[in-house]
Amino acid sequence: MYQEVAFLAGSTEHQFTTFRFNRVENPEEVSSKKGLFYKRAQLLLQPQPRQQDGEKIGLAEGAAIINVGGIKYRIPWSTLEEFPLTRLGKLRSCSNEAEIMDICDDYDHSHNEYFFDRSPSAFRTIVTFLAAGKLRLLREMCALSFQEELLYWGVEENNLDWCCLRKLRLRQEEYKELQRLEDEEAELLSAQSCEETQQPPGVGAQEETCTAGCMRRLRDMVENPHSGLPGKIFACLSVIFVAITAVTLCVSTMPDLREEEERGECSQRCYNIFVLETVCVAWFSLEFLLRFIQTQSKCMFLRTPLNVIDVVAILPYYITLIVDSLSVGGKPAGSGNNYLEKVGLVLRVLRALRIFYVMRLARHSLGLQTLGLTVRRCTREFGLLLLFLCVAMALFSPLVFLAESEMGAKQEFTSIPGSYWWAVISMTTVGYGDMVPRSIPGQVVALSSILSGILLMAFPVTSIFHTFSRSYVELKEEQSRALRQKPDSQDSTKSQNSEDSQETDSYHGIAEVAASAVQRKKSVAVQRAAEIRASVQT
Image (cartoon, rainbow, N blue to C red; front, side, top):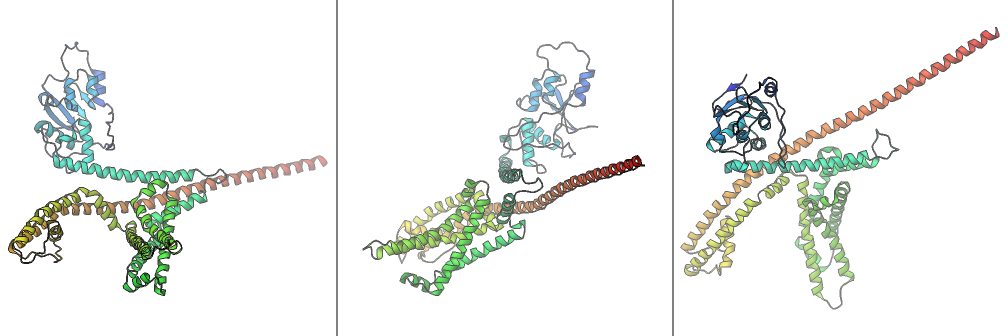
């Protein structure tokens, strides 16, 4: 039983037939299956006189009855004439039942009623757009599902209001990012399955190769700390060695150690620091090699930002060893202290690059991963923040320079470029105090720069904060989803192995039964042969 409502339906909600949606990248319409009314019309339709040229089916009443999910809408044809490219507008140009059925899911000729098996809540918004020209997203409906409805009804996305269109674009970007991650996981799983299926013919079907098993366990250990005890131990060791590296870097900059380095001496403490650094670099090198061995795509592995950071952090140690050996044995004659100063500068720069080891904590820290994702998503907001600071700096630096140069008792602002530093420090509310305006006009300019800096930095920071919160929730949900999927995959693997073992046991049982039957037949035959020989002798 259908429920008929007015042209613009209210907010009544109805349960609706489930339907699936295609991907955002290439959405396509799904051909529908014709229903009961169309079949009844084909069987019971009486012969009618030939239509005149220009006469259209279903236009006698001047309005179309659109039934979407059990809700009827009476829409005038004059309204649909304004949107000829939409699905409803194309009904105006239909001249027979076949053309009508290419557009709708079902058609009742007797009542001039068109049936569409789509979402009634989304169609209510479509009808509002056709009548009033306003198109907005629904709070209770997924934005991507609504985009699929717009595609079906032939309404362009650009007709959405700017706020709803921005929300739709944001959901599309999130969906594409999720699809990219899922594709990478699927590619990794497919590569693993290919390795497992490509087994030598001599190995049984129930046992995988030793290499494939080792690679899978190695991959779980180095990439997934939650895979088990080896993964947790590996992650803890990585964090411990990163902390040791940071501590040794700080200790190596102490004044007494720097004096020993300048004199070319090496005490026991300096030697101990060198040993600790060597052990840490050896561990980092081993970890990098293990990650490189277990990965499927070597080129993609080398392009990953965290792996690039690993290379930048590990190479300075080996370059330092090479430079030290060359500086000792290959010093050119007559170069003097100039050569040693250049070598020392290179070594100090290379040792300073060891600070990149701290970035390795992003592998095991959800907060650092959220920070990196936020920076990648908020490049536009950071650009706006930099633009605001540059404009304000270019405005307040000349003002404070003119005020202090004319009325200041002490000339601390020597030039406009020299005032840029003061403007940035004042707008960020840091205030080092190295440059202070003394005159009243200069202090007024300083107060204006401080207040404007607070306001200018507050505008983009709010958006960055919301992006950070949303990114943290997404990564948290993704991590929990991965943890839920891991036991499921292990259970499926165990069930598959148990099924294989049961199948093998059944094969062995059948073979044993067959062998025992053959043995019984042989014993019966031998017994009968003995009886026959005994009867013949008697």
